[in-house]
Length: 123
Image (cartoon, rainbow, N blue to C red):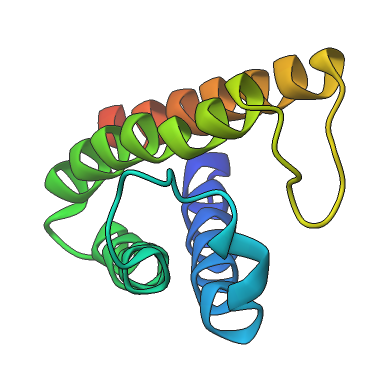
């Protein structure tokens, strides 16, 4: 098995677990949904549902389409993290320093890059 296939499986497990967490610990996510968005719990649970379902398509013949949608999704959901940073809100009950927010941004770029690697992968 090649390295990118292992990456795809790890990626799917990671995002499915993150999506499930939206339902197991909803209060964690409630505070990071921007206040101007109505129905914050519904919005973040819908986001969790996308994190559960969409990565599975990376294991199908629709891998490229799913990877592209994941890249778009990752760009959009970073908006919640940016909202927390700009408004100095707690994330999971604690406040992040500027360095921690920068690291979180770096992680998001890494997720996007890994998704791009999956997008470009030819099996």
